[in-house]
Length: 146
Image 1 (cartoon, helix red, strand yellow):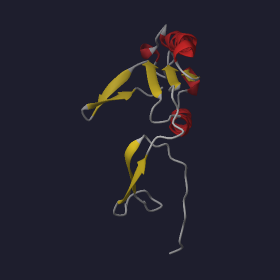
Image 2 (spheres, one colour; image 1 turned 90 degrees about the horizontal axis):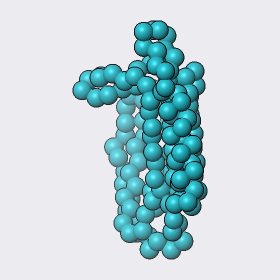
Image 3 (cartoon, helix red, strand yellow; image 1 turned 30 degrees about the horizontal axis):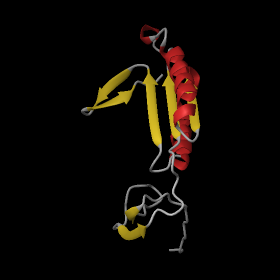
Image 4 (tube, one colour; image 1 turned 180 degrees about the horizontal axis):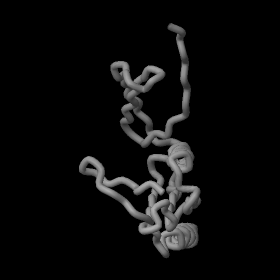
């Protein structure tokens, strides 16, 4: 087994931060025992005004034409635009990602959430807006695939 080193930058909150790491096998089926470290940070250099991050998703067009919606995509676009406009006055910066209809795929959503995960800091505000059909799956709610 080869040794592998992975490094990443982490955003910390002032005070006590617990970082926990697990390693998975290539199939993602087996995890190592978690390893934890506690980092105390005094907050020097902390961002004083949070940023706003918005992921707005709207789906009108579904493969099953009976599910077609009229305003979902327009609502997602309008929500993103409204939050960008009003957020500019309240936040240090505003980052809006809008996915509509054909852009709303597993790959598109994975990429958008990945982009947000890299950008959003612990003190920031994240809004996920979804306009479209959902369904109940194992007691939870899931986006109905196109």
